[in-house]
Length: 356
Image (cartoon, rainbow, N blue to C red; front, side, top):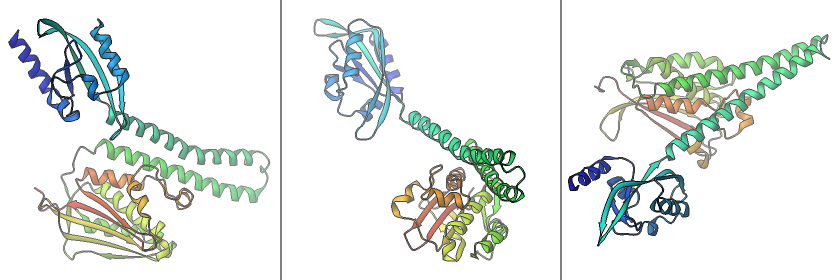
């Protein structure tokens, strides 16, 4: 019996979920290391209810002690941070001697659902936001089509005006769908880190050349500073092009009031672990971003000014895509800004030549 009990305790100690063993009086008989990390104050010999004063949990323990085989419940802690647990209380066949009594042994297992709940909430929000973003231009298209088929059937001026608006709304939906697909592709491959070398300076120059017509249209001049020698990073070419495009295009659109955008590639960066990195910085001289908005910039569909973003063709996904591309490339992403002083977006990627 002693060997069997030792084996049980070894198994419990190996589990990553917090586990408590209680005797028939609901006193803590034993805990595993995960339980001691999550609830350090709940030690052996202490009544279970002293540290975990949740009526539903105490009732579940009492129900099992009174003869039920198992009881499950979801427990939500509000402080110090909100956490969700699936708690399973099970009566074991093992008994423990307490004085002259043999008391039943109860196992209480806490399975942390916090991350699963957070991801589910993000999924629900994502679907709701995507549906809303698509529904608005779609409703506009349907309205104009009905008008053209009805009262404006023979109005050529209305045809020209409405078709222009319809084209803009269709382009808006196409941009949104393109960004949704890009974000999905990056997330699906985020665990697969790139291994190829990419000439990063040449890639940035290529994208600047592609975006110069947009910059001229917005009366913005792009200045580019890059090392004379080729600079290689570990990366996937198409994703890095998308990252560069999103950052420079954002600077042109949202910082156009400053009249210029400065793009710089620097290969002299050494991170805190000693790994050489390449830095891409994109600076605009627009209105800047208030400090309280900075932490949320990479959230999906987050916009500081929804109307202004839509007017400029934004989908609310650009910086979310940048963040996930950076994560896949084992890089770092930072934003610096203050109102009235423009903004600087920085991406740090591992150099290729020194990476392996």
